[in-house]
Length: 305
Image 1 (cartoon, rainbow, N blue to C red):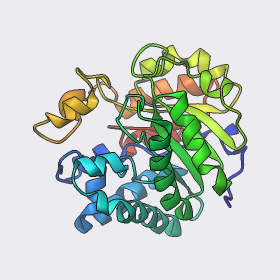
Image 2 (cartoon, one colour; image 1 turned 180 degrees about the vertical axis):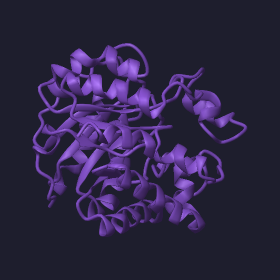
Image 3 (tube, rainbow, N blue to C red; image 1 turned 135 degrees about the horizontal axis):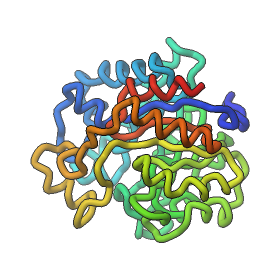
Image 4 (cartoon, rainbow, N blue to C red; image 1 turned 60 degrees about the vertical axis):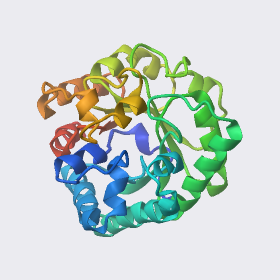
C-alpha cells in the first residue's frame, strides 16, 4: 500500500525534471535508441542516475520518477536486449529507493511510458498493450509510492494501464501528451480521460513533455477537469518531427533526441518560472519538468511553494 494521500496534489507540489536528456548532458554515451535505459544497462552509469535523482531532490523536487521511460519491451527488443527487461526495470526501482533512503520524505512515482512509440497512440491490440503494461507495472510496484502514466497519447492506453495497476491498490497520476493544438495524438481531448474513465485513486492529470505555450493553449480545459492538474514542461523546439519521432530517432547520427527535436535556448530557469507562475496562479498545483529541464529549472519552480 502507498503512504501518499489522494489529496497530495491539491497543494502545490514540485516534481523532478528530465532524466534522459540530463544523462546525455552529463556524459552518458548514446547506445542505439536505448536513451535513458542505457544508464541502467551499463553499471558505470548507475551512480550518474543516482546523482541526477539526488540533484533534482536537492533542487526542491518532492517526487522523483523512476528511470523507466525506455525500459519498455518494444524499445529493448528494437535494441536486441529484451532479455534485460526485468533487470532494467528492477534496477530503476532499486536506484530510486536508494535515493529515498537518503531523502525519506520524497515519493517515488513508477513511470509507465507509452508501450509502443513516443508521442504516438498505440495501434496494437488491447491484449498486446495490456501485456506490456502489466509486465512493467508488476516489476515496478514493489519500489514505488504511486504510478505515473508518463506521456501517454490516447484514452485507450490510459484505460488499459489503469486496468493493469488496479490490483496494486496504489494511487496514480496521469500524464498525457499533446504535441500541438488541443488534441492528444489519438485525436481525443484531454477531458475524455476524465469523462470516459471511471476513476478511483486518481491523484491528478498533467500534460507531460509539452511546451509552455502548448500548456497555455490547453490551460482552460485543464482547469475545467475538476481534479488537481499541472505539467511537466519540456524545452524541445518540437515533439512532432517528420515523419515521426521514432523514424527520426532511427536515422539519428548522434543518438540524442535534441538532434531532431531541437533545444530552445530561450527557456532559461527564469523564463520557465514565469510560465509556471502564470499556470500556478490559474490553479495548477503539479509543477515539474521534462526533457531538457535541469535541476536549475526545478530549483526555480520550487520558489512557487
